[in-house]
Length: 316
Image (cartoon, rainbow, N blue to C red):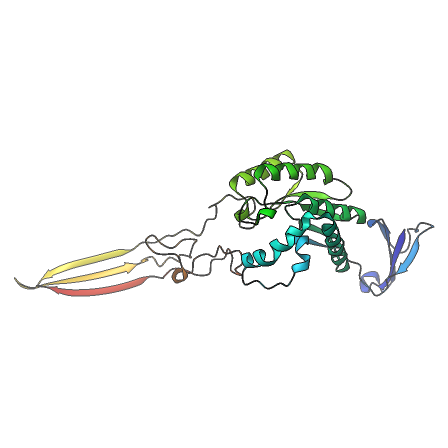
């Protein structure tokens, strides 16, 4: 048992009084705080004076891959290039439980050293990597959420499973680890591009069987929204054209024409798609659906305001 004690000026709010705050900590769980020193500490408590310092709750990392610890900083021009050259090569080593144990210990040492005490963690496709991570987290009493990656395509053979294998192994891991100590499980499809529809359906079946388990959102999807569910701003536009022909003689006629585009001058923001018959692209500044773009999901432009044009021609 430890008592962390702060002796800090509170200021005018407390009429310049000095308030002693005691934070009683047992097994990393906050038990009580008291101002004014009116809550006695247990007789066996060890006092640690933290005057002049700040006590913060642990940070939470909501997306991290512990098997990538040893390839952080490896150069890759694009994500898929980096995965193929470094990450997938490293992740194949985690079928060895001894290797997974070593990396899990180092990973958690570094997380705690930097103040991160809870994380949502991707393991590899191999159950050994999950067992190693959860075992080390349980030993430390850590609050961790993790799961086996589900990948049945577009990855090396040593890192792929099948929809049924992924379902069976994930279910066994959920039964083995979820709810032990402060641990929880995340059903973990990795990418939309590395899981077939059959595997995503199997992941959905697991989520229905274990409704209290977490579910990782695979890269390339938007929460639990289905495909093609994004809707851009609507288009409200009227064009008008008027023309009249005047007879000048038996041989010559004069035609006058006036055209107005967006005659009401309504502001039409650029949506997810270009107008009918026009190619989507930079010329229309279409809504960004690129996850890596700083403008993702933003409308950054509008179509033309009202345009008027007039013409006359002689017909003979």
